[in-house]
Image 1 (cartoon, rainbow, N blue to C red):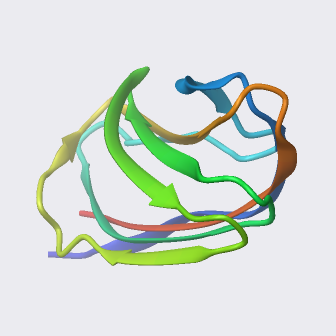
Image 2: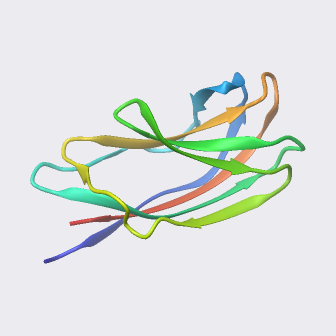
Length: 115
């Protein structure tokens, strides 16, 4: 079985709309699982430039799938150990939930494997 690594990554500015209202990250691509394949999330790493707690939220098909809280001026690394398959043609994206009006940069590194 052939596998291909896929990544959603970069440093992305944001302005929070509330901890209960995740917003898309400017410039972060959305990954769509191609027909005939499936994807598995392998790890998530993230960093937060603000003095507030924020959460990176992994969405699948527009629905929150996993929340990764990142402390003030902090970072997180979560090994996901391939917990579940994401079937085609699902889309995967990372959004940020932050207190309303809080602006900063979220550093994202989401590693997936496509099989």
